[in-house]
Length: 189
Image (cartoon, rainbow, N blue to C red; front, side, top):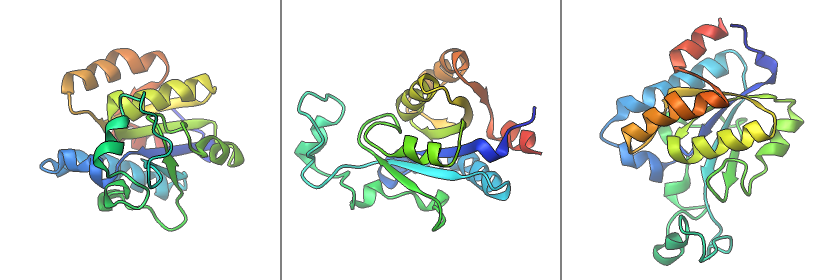
């Protein structure tokens, strides 16, 4: 399988300190993320980091938003908060963009679509935490925007292993090619 490298981008989504910390005792789970990033860099495939963060005061969080409204009450996850910074294990290089989103999908409230279109990207390789959150939401929106989508199943994590399995084995294949990071790297040649 040949991949169109010049029009492909690797998205590393929500690998930020406050989310990666949920898996702090299992650092080996982060190795497929790093392998994918290193392979993309070696093949000059753009690596784009995506994080979720909010302005001070949480102006963009509606009290009707069940997922995010609690943040406004207890704080954290602001743009400058340590929890929203990309984890050191997959630290971006100076030229690699970090996109800030305001909701679950990488496209929601961010300039990701503009960045991808400006670079002529038509194929997205998705990695992220969590499988049932940012990966699912971004995959659905990317497919609706007519991007070709690949998901690196072992470079996606979810707190619920069964949910991860159902997503990667039953849900995602309807709109994406699902493979391991190793299979993707092998396909790069």
